Image 1 (cartoon, helix red, strand yellow):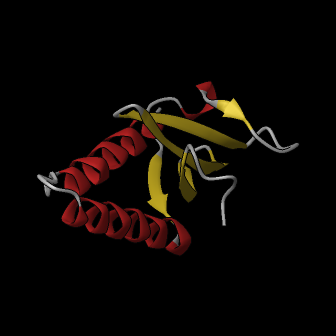
Image 2 (cartoon, one colour; image 1 turned 60 degrees about the vertical axis):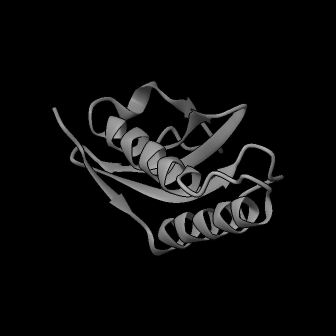
Length: 105
């Protein structure tokens, strides 16, 4: 069985926020890596597609068996995707945060 993976408006805003942050940081750094923001987004998009195969293997959050998190390693830390399994065909990514952020929004 394969699930369709959709992005909420909030998750898309989070992608843009994370990209903008990384780009600004790399522009300010001496010898900054301007390819880093694009690689981070590619890593997140690739990880999100793994939800299409088996979303139930990821850790539960909240009290719902359908609300889950996917930890995505990137560099020395990584990101966390919050998602919900909507039905037997669809997963929605609700939000994304860096592991060092306290919480989603």
